[in-house]
Amino acid sequence: MQKNGLMSAKNKDIKGIVTMNVYERLLKYVVIRTPSNEESDTTPSTQCQFDLANVLKKEMKDLGICNVILTDSCFLYGKIPATPGYENAPAIGFIAHMDTVSDYCDHDIKPMITEKYDGEALALGESGVTLSPEMFPHLKNLKGRTLITSDGTTILGADDKAGIAEILTLIERLNEQNIPHGPLCVAFTPDEETGTGAAHFDIDKFGADFAYTLDGDTENEIQYENFNACSASIEFHGVSVHPGSSKDTMVNASLVAMEFDSMLPKGETPRDTEGYEGFYHLLSMEGECALAKLHYIIRDHDAEKFEQRKKVMKQITDDLNQKWGDGTVILTLKDQYRNMSEIIAQHMHLIDNAKKACEKVGLTPQCLPIRGGTDGCQLSFHGLPCPNLGTGGHAYHGPYEHITVEGMEKAVDMITELVKIYSTQCK
Image (cartoon, rainbow, N blue to C red):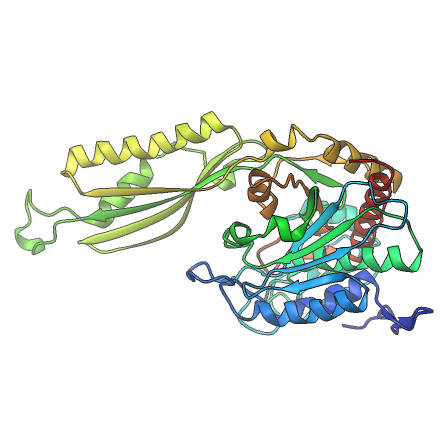
């Protein structure tokens, strides 16, 4: 991991506490594998998430965070009391998740550091994977920075261990520089990637009036609009008879499944859409003559368009059942999360202050829609308004994932200014 002396020796402050740069924290966390499992019905969905939680629990206590609690469900909470005289400021929370996706996470993660990245194609170890500006045009903007990647055989895990590293570095900075602040709350959560963790989040135990997740991409991103989301599971029941005597009798479930997909609107897949445009995304398929299954996710920022997409699925189901017989197609829709913008619209100080914090550290704020979801989506509807901030990472959920040291440092600068801004306000 070490190149050209970047990895500095750890220093001790005047209190004797070992301090770390934000990227050092990231490198420490990403090698602790924490893939969640969407097939599990337990919380956490994987016990390995406790491996990171226990490390973070000790670090939180070492940093002087109070009331550190690790629950049986792998939620880690802590509080930082207000500086004397700042008790009337609103309690602001910062949240990041400990789990990663399970894709590309079946063996040890080996971070690579490239100093003074030249903005050109970069081979990731001996994996045969190349990070290139042809695929990711923003790489040109990272020229001259220090780039952190995996070796191309795994994810990196900056989603969302970068958020964790930045939050704890914020706390360390507040301590070292004696920055006055109001009450602060910290939480690290499991199972964000499966969409199930937030349902078990204890808002009362957390104790914040408002919060931010640090789970976004570029360090100047501020996000409070996300997809409305649901899953669609479809079973196709066929009639299987000998193919030599199947005239007007056989119903091939796999062919009916193919017919279903062909009836969806063209050009409305993730590859074809961007910004506020919604989509149908086929996640998986399996089948034979007697039984086939398709699994989709449906996404749209606009609530009316989202409901229309579900109606399209239902209409196709009805049409195919009319053609092939009742019960041939069985559709199950399951809502997952809603667009938090309707909640955040009532608390726009969260966005206005985040913009101010960006500008104070020399960043141009970008309010971009989330083409996905975060824990904050669900928490906002549960009573904790919670927009999302960028961490400096890119290309999550695959071997191309990367982040820069400079982007992480700017993210810490930004949330430090955010804490200062809220310290001057009253509930």
